Image 1 (cartoon, rainbow, N blue to C red):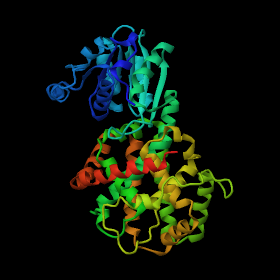
Image 2 (spheres, rainbow, N blue to C red):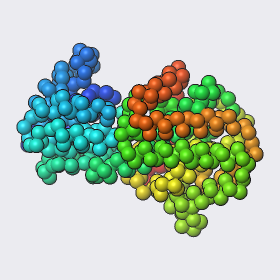
Image 3 (cartoon, rainbow, N blue to C red):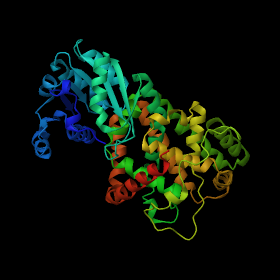
Image 4 (cartoon, helix red, strand yellow):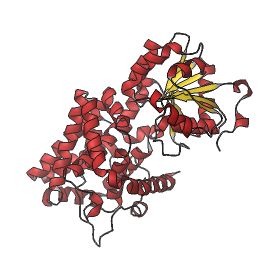
Length: 441
């Protein structure tokens, strides 16, 4: 049940929460916190002032201000909800105006640059308590992971932040900034790279994958719907995590290497070598027979996934080698990542991706069929080539730290899929909701 005005502690009745940056997540926080009775002051770039005032005019406890100076000097707890790449610049601009004794935090997806900016730009009398909701703005925060980082804080300040954010009804996880960045790299970086590469590959082939018989069915539904979900977001949401997080850089590079190595084995017809590599990766990630890490029941069920197809289900499904999934497990294996270790901090997207990966790898008949198809069937060979190019392209972009190149690559593919994204998002949202409900324990 959401926090109500009556539940706001009496000693915090006059407490003001400031939000600098009113993108999708900033707006979500403003709505949720104001619904719970907290007084909110917020701002974005000054050119959005009038639009935001109109948008939040019906909320008596939300006041839109012209800039971050006004937010900082009047707020007891300030949340910077801006792009990771811009955090240092924005904190440098507004940090000196921070109210004496306030609490400051941010909710960027990469904490290393955020914490460095706070340490360098904020007055020393300010406590630093950051957070990160590990889900998108359209996902109900209830029962989703919410990381709280008590970086420079008194117990009282940390408790105030937890009290304020309790209205989200999320599962709170306390981490350090370094732990957060390592875990988000483990659970998000390669997952995003896989879906970004799928979209780029289908874009290169000028293909809406759901319009034919090649990408239909349970696993394919997840691939398509989550790929479109990513490309419906703003480009910087994923760029900051990938480029500014050193752990993420390593993982995206390894995913491109795994994809390339497996594709070369497919091209060369090296069946036994491919099978040995795939099964060795499976054993390292999921465990050997008799001591597997997955639960008795799978994370996802085919009958649930089959309901959410954008295309018409054909009489028979074309076999697929699932290069993206084989490369994922090979990548995890090479990096020593056990995906189940971080389930408490996993995003809905990661749980779905792990679920379809598990769906393939826990069924030896299905896995052997994917390996056979990889060697004997050329149906998906051209798509696999484009996917390999795409994975390498994203890895190179990340290794060079090119935000502008990332933006251009992302927006070009987003524009290609844009005419179909609204339709896909309806199906995708329903799929995410149904799958998450079916996997609650």
